[in-house]
Length: 379
Image (spheres, rainbow, N blue to C red):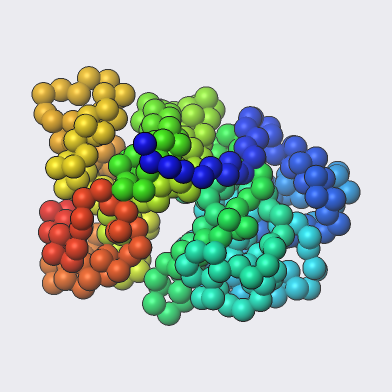
């Protein structure tokens, strides 16, 4: 059995209406001023206001930075740092989707340690303690609330910089399923597919441990059995609860086992063509499952068996078909040609995929030629 060193974080507070506990939870660090990082859409539906009110009731002066864009760049982070320097917070709250939570981490890196976002690209680059942070996710997908990595895009190359440090982990993840009810249908689809791929990839990576396997398995059970229900009945809070908790567990799995080839393939699609991450990874995941079947058939068979009968096809083939069907039923594309990708682009994409750090954790060795073949199979 593989050895591991588990440091459980964050504290997870789960339940409908739990956003009202934000202020009381924040009191643990006796903050005077809080920086709440969010985006205009979350502000418009009133979630940020509810968070500010809870913090205010706890006697915490709160300032809102809402300049977060989808796939935040280092420029978003820098604007947030300037804002933070004006108010000198001693607590940061990331309230919103993965973009808000990642941007909150990025702001914390630079505000607390100086430099630029590029300085933290990699693992363990913080030079000192960071401010305590609380995550309040309003989507169910990225799992950013339970990871110590900030994914920040380079403004010129669009390459995602993975900036990880245990000090950048949220101290508390406050999961209120009611906040996810305001997700537009497409956001529900994209984030849900993203979470599903997290569960699938972490379950088979070369870095997986007994702890990560437990998180992956439970994440898959929650997501696979409730994702379609959320698409079909968006106001089903119970289904939303299962999906949000599943996404959080999948994030914990990533923290303990990393990801694989599907995410390595997805990132160049986002950087070169602007294809939203959930769409990109959803289109590639079925092909990666078939590719990995040579070494991960039994694991895929187990996962497929957790979602009804597996039929006559092999576990991997059946699972790949199932995921492809979910992507289609979510209203997303399953072929790269339908996303504006040309065959002539595949070589450059493959070279970019081979440079992604998650490629090294795929259970089956994958190099430039294999990446090209995977793109071609998805074309």
